[in-house]
Image (tube, rainbow, N blue to C red; front, top):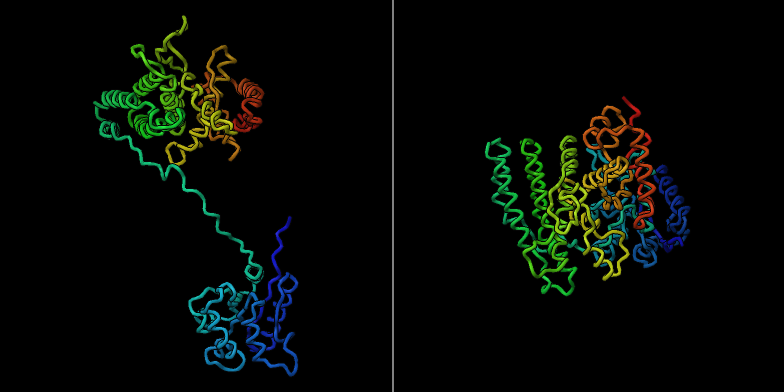
Length: 481
């Protein structure tokens, strides 16, 4: 249903400066009437024998007159300031109305003439107020729309409704304080190329893991177990951002220490499993560590991609991670990178308790926690998608590396190819990174894999289609040298 405003009534105050000026006012009034604004004008509404002063006072003070348009030229200013003639009378009436209890939105000045210095001819009672500038005929239509919108109380720009302050603003500030000193010392050594940097990375990793172990869900402080786990995840998140900063320094200044980062992620992976020495525990005790390891690995890959280190991405994905998972039942002791991509159970429990219709609360958690972080959430989505592509290509080659790209529920916001794949219109560029990351898969095999990926992912978790061919830029892959 169309929102039709009540018909406004406008009175035009102007000076009979010249015949051309009078005709300009009449033409303006006529057009306003055509566009739904009732206009009171002396040329039409003040008949012979009528009291012009009473007419003027009634037009300004009449409550049915919702808008007063003051057409300002040199003659109008002189008469208004000198209180001469009809304009002077109107000015006497207008001034207390303008500065009194009436809404200032009732009055508008329309400037049609300026002096040699470019100053508008506006009367003294309008000093300092905004006006609508009609002095340039080439901008008439824009100014007329501005006037019409003001007359109808339908502005082009509307102030948004006040929303809720984001939780991350009101929540207590969290800092990775326990490892801050080691982080700064290690980061400085990396930037300065000091020979003790590799050892400092190890020490930092040990202090990080030790600090994470001290964070467990505080069930007695929350009415529901899932809230305790989520609070714990938020509490350790600053350590993940700190780790991403350190990884960026290693990649930029000391890539010879890259294996130290691989070892650190192995340590994070081991936190996901119960220590055999414990006799009392809850399964949810390890959910914060699972999420930390998952988000940290996404950031790790995203940081490598941002640096263009596809060789190091390949090393990270080819590595056999010794996680030391208990009760492996005869399976190998090492696992692929996919060990970091498991779904954390607390999110399903929370979704069921809240009866939420959110598609993937775990993806929501990543989104909410990476709006002001480096790497950006868009880069994290790209990393997530690349890991899924890698797992698809590995499956075609007979290797099991299952990675599900949860964050792509947000990809529809931009719905375009990720940068890595957009640049892969160059066959040489595609060959460069795919050799390292996809183990040299051909363009044709890549396209087939993406098509299979789309079919398999489309109906999963109500995604209504992953859009993998678009995100992977399949149509244009390798179309340029």
